[in-house]
Amino acid sequence: MSIIDAEKAIGYTFKDKSLLTRALTLSSASMNENNQRLEFFGDAILEFLVSEKLFEEEGSEGQLTERRKSLVADSVLAPVSEKLGLDKMLVRGKNDDNNKKAVPSVYEAVVAAIYIDGGMEAAKQFVYSTLDFSRSAVSENYKGALQELLQGSGQPCPEYIREDIGTEQKHLFSVKINVFGKTFCGEAENVKNAEQIAAKSAVEYYNVNHGESRN
Image (spheres, helix red, strand yellow):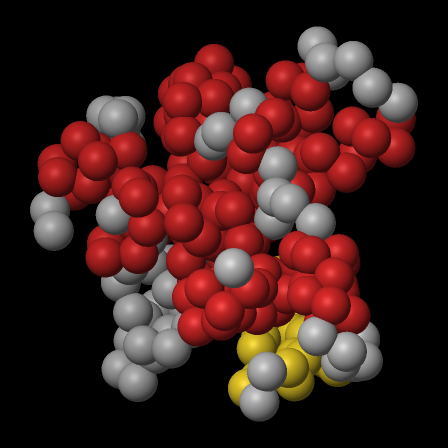
C-alpha cells in the first residue's frame, strides 16, 4: 500500500511523509527508523485527548479513569487499527507476523505522527473521529455473565490464570480460563480487561454451542 493510500485510509495528508512511514515501521524492520518512540509519545497524547473529551461527561474521578482505561486499552485500539487498515500497512521484518502488540500500538504511533506534523487539532480530529466515545461502546460485565452461566449449570467459578507478558515500557497481561472443556484467553494492558476478554470468549462460545439447550 502506498503512502497516499495510507493517508486516505486515516483521513489525514502529511506534509512530512516520512513521519507516516516511520509510524508504520516496526523495530523488526528497522532498528533506527521505527515507530517505538512515536508509540511512546502517542500513548501520552491519546490519554490527554481522551481525558479532555471525558472531562465534559458527568462522573466521579474514579469513573472517568475507568472510562479512559477502557477507551485506550489494546482490546479497543486493535479493532480500530484494523478498521482503518493500519494492520495491513505495517512494515515488518522477516518472521514478525505474530506480533499482536503491533496492531494497537500503530494507532498510538499514528496519533503522534499526526500531532508532530499538524498539531494538536489535527491529532484531536483523528482521535475523535476514529474512537467510539458512546456509552454503548463500554464493554459488558462478561465475568459476571460467565459466573451466572456456570452456577446455573452447577459448575464452579473459573480460576483466572494471569501472566505478565509485557515490557518495562508497555504493560501487557495474558489471562487464561478453562471452562466448558476448552481454554479461553484474553490479552490487555491491565488484568481486569484481560479477564473480561477471556470471559467474553467463553460466554460467546457457550451461547453459540449451548444457547438453544437453555430454552
